[in-house]
Length: 440
Ligand code: GDP
Ligand code: MG
Image (cartoon, rainbow, N blue to C red; front, top):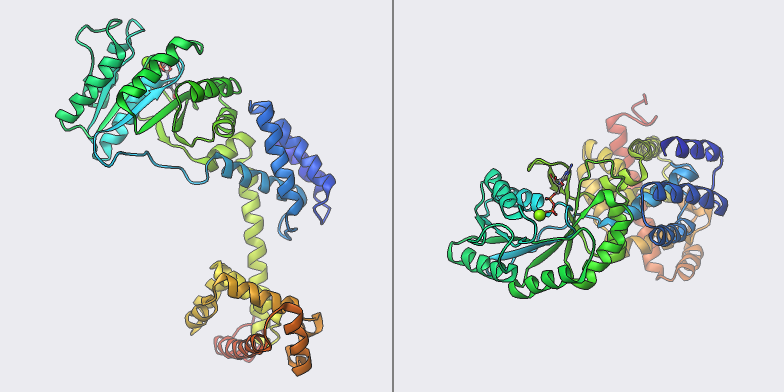
């Protein structure tokens, strides 16, 4: 994939503006990338649609070429859909919290039970594992082995493997936890190789009996787009509040993550990436997005381009500050970037007296900034470049044009002159920007 994207980048490198053709060309490549990552087709379609919408409305960034820009949008969108920040486990106000695991046979539930138990124990919880898979001949023993490795007790039916009523075991397991002061119960359930009614009924019976605070749908990432069908079946048959992706250490390309997330809308909480209990982590949407697009390096490049752009702007503005040539346009840009605590804000912070300046500039809320922006946009280029020419009649025109009072225009212009004076003094005493002090 990376090669393919690189060639698209080269094709588009020379152009300056984001055109519909650019978007379409890049979107086609992204589509192929998603299909290669094994994302389900309907999910690919709706995703590409969203990205095109956003790309069309996007402002042209000067730091990125068109293809980079589309890819950045794709990545942002992907991270957004995958969940933005990762969510924490929902725990009950009154312990024990019940976490139920559901999923096909072999998806990694029992392994996950151990991983999760160990993880929670490490955070000071006192989990209890409950063995409700009474279908597979060795399922109870397997959970006991896992529990022992995790150093977490297991509640299992006396009868052992393959017999008993899972609903009853689940209920007794939760009672046991309550009595023995376990604050979290992890209920391991049975799965089948394919979705079937009996399995769904058993899982939903267990669910009704223990009223889980969190039902986690465990899905093998290597199943790719099949994950959609399975997720839908579990959503309708049992219902779940979160997803865990397993076997990400295999050659899983991550498409399952996007598909499951799009189709069910439930957050992905954890990622399982190996057979050992420690191979387990919170789910990171940004990492998964890079994995799906196969473009970790690409993103680094984009970040660097953006940083270089900011740096260049900061230097240009610094030079202007020194010579007192600062325009209203620069002023606006500065206020915007100071609010972002961007490079200019940092630059100011490093100047003597700059900290105070920085505070003053940062003292705008968004609506205030919007208004300032409207006022400055309402000026002619000549006025922006040379605010001295803004006389009373111009002020009135600007105020009317940007829907504010003349007093607001006055306020802005006065602030600007004050700031320019103050900055030129600061820069002069610091000796940069070609002003009084000299060298650059
Ligand atoms: P269950 O049937 O849903 O309980 O699945 P198991 O927990 O028994 O796991 C089925 C198989 O997948 C076992 O051989 C596990 O060792 C293996 N497994 C589970 N999770 C992972 C994982 O994240 N990576 C790898 N490579 N193997 C896993
Ligand atoms: Mg199992």
